[in-house]
Amino acid sequence: MTSRRAALVAGLAFVAAPVLAPASALAEITRGPVTNLPLPRFVSMKTSEGNVRRGPSTTHRIDWVFKRRDMPLQVTAEYEHWRKVQDYEGVGGWMHYALLSGVRTVLTQTDMMPVLNRPDPDARAVATFEIGVIARLGECTADWCEVSAGGYNGWAKKSNLWGVAPDEIRD
Image (cartoon, rainbow, N blue to C red; front, side, top):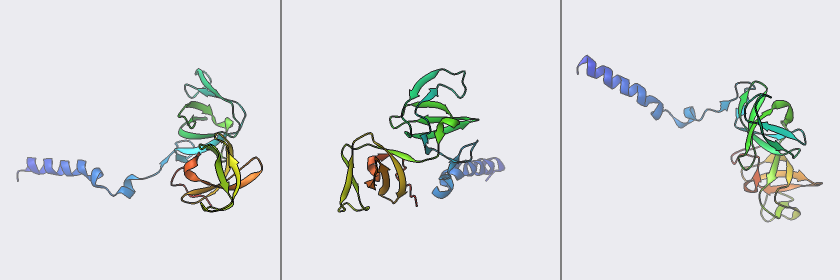
């Protein structure tokens, strides 16, 4: 093999190496450059009203105003004191970090969602939540999450909630 051909083969092997890397090496968690917290991640609104801007500064135009305290939001990017967020419909933009809280909440996505006394489909219902209810998020297993709203506390199917990742486990 000529040295030129050997160099070409070696170069192709170098280019192909990332494609052949183990999945665990490629599945590294992306971290925010400001907080070093995982991206994306869920947060909630600290205030009852928050401006959502086109860019990360007060000079950028306000595109939306979110008006639900404790509404769950997903942070997808960070820049200085600004967080790029989106709601359950994918609507969003940049919000100042002071308007956001690390307190976890979820939004019910199923009308008349049963809230059960234990994480079991045969368990007794303690409440029924309408679609759009914001609930505090507690413990989560692979398929169930503990939720509380309106003085009721119980377990709901994770697939009926927005604001928690499908593979997220919480103790």
